[in-house]
Length: 159
Image 1 (tube, rainbow, N blue to C red):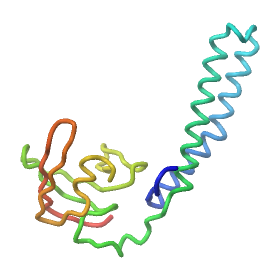
Image 2 (image 1 turned 180 degrees about the horizontal axis):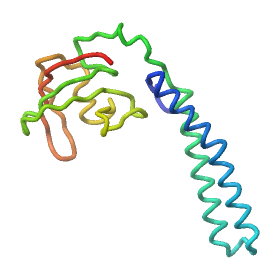
Image 3 (image 1 turned 90 degrees about the vertical axis):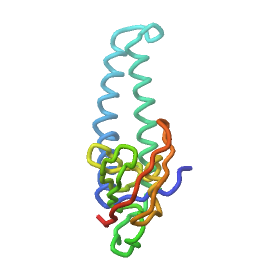
Image 4 (image 1 turned 180 degrees about the vertical axis):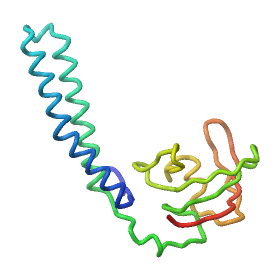
């Protein structure tokens, strides 16, 4: 069983939309592919049929994972009540990479809502874990596969 998944209302809506798409269009497409492969003859030597059945299994696994994620989701809708002096989930944190002398801004979010291209960093990532609980002026030592990085917390704000 997975742990609690904290999400924003938008993040929960996106999960539900993904699930709806997979259970309707996704299942329909797989069903058609299996039907077309069946029409091509002997199933014991039919690579198309085997591939379609494997795709069906992967789709059902994704559906199951999404259902579990939604079931374990808890909405974060009272952001203003969170302590704004510390980096917490839904905090926007401005940090300075002390090694590169570069300023970066991240919004700490749940794993399902992470998107590095838009600056949304998962709280379960090495950097996200390293920033959690830190205050302005603190130095976060973050161990990554590339080595240890140091980030100075410059500013913290809420979404």
